[in-house]
Image 1 (cartoon, rainbow, N blue to C red):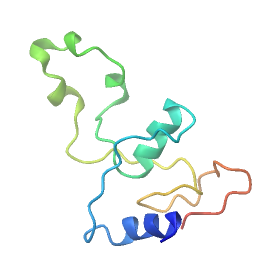
Image 2: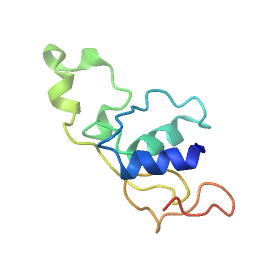
Image 3: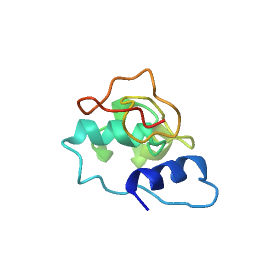
Image 4: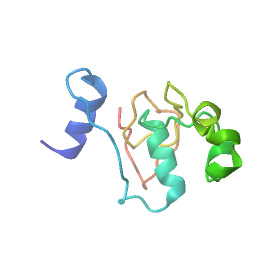
Length: 101
């Protein structure tokens, strides 16, 4: 199965498969990793103020209630990268990138 075919199955038939994105070593930088995780619906940080903050700065270590969300924090960034919702109005990441959808 081609990689793009698998990603489409992941998006459209998610109830049949349950993969997790756990590492994005193939991305150029941390900014892209964050964007790809958000676009795939795999980002559960409630607000950006929590990113990179030391856990010791939270009272009683209550980072979970302060920063974690039960629902993914979704946002579109690139139309030509995998996403759980159409991002057709977003710019392409790659030159001449075709829409994932």
